[in-house]
Amino acid sequence: MFSKKRFFTEAEKKALVQAITDAESMSSGEIRVHIEAKCKIDVLKQATEIFYRLGMDKTTHANSTLIYIAHDDKKFAIIGDKGIHAVVPSNFWEGIKQVMHEHFKRGEFFEGTVFAIKETGTHLKQYFPYEKDQKNELPNEISEG
Image 1 (tube, rainbow, N blue to C red):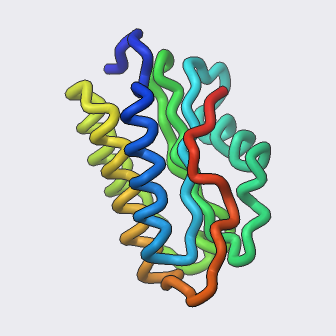
Image 2: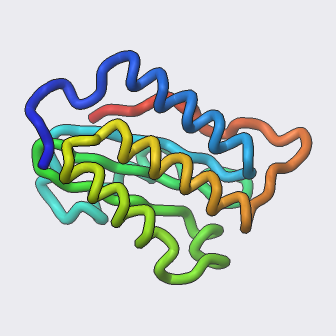
C-alpha cells in the first residue's frame, strides 16, 4: 500500500502546508499532519501520544485535528480534540478515512492527505466557524517522527 520512497517530496510538503492554511481559514479549527515510518503500537494510541506531544490539546476551543501517517507500517489515523467530539456525530471521521484509504491503496498518498485536510476543514466549518481576529494557534508545517 505504501512505498519505500521518501513519503512526501519537499514540494508536496509545501503544498500540504498550503492546504492546511486554506482549510484553517474556513473555521477556527486547527489541523496538523504528522508522518513517521513506523508505528509499533496501536495506531490510535500512537496518534494520541503524538497529539499530546505536539500540544494539540491546548487550543482555545479544543478543536484541533491530527492526521497521523506511519507509512512503512501502512497505518494512519485521524483524531480530534474533545471540543470536536463533544459536538460531532460518532462517525465523523469515517468518510474521510475511507476516501483517504482508497487514495492510499492506489499509491496516491499526497492526494489522499490533501483530501483529508480539505474535508476536515469543510467539516469543522459547520461546527467551528471562522472567527474574526482568530489567531493560528498551532504551526501548519508537517511534523515528522
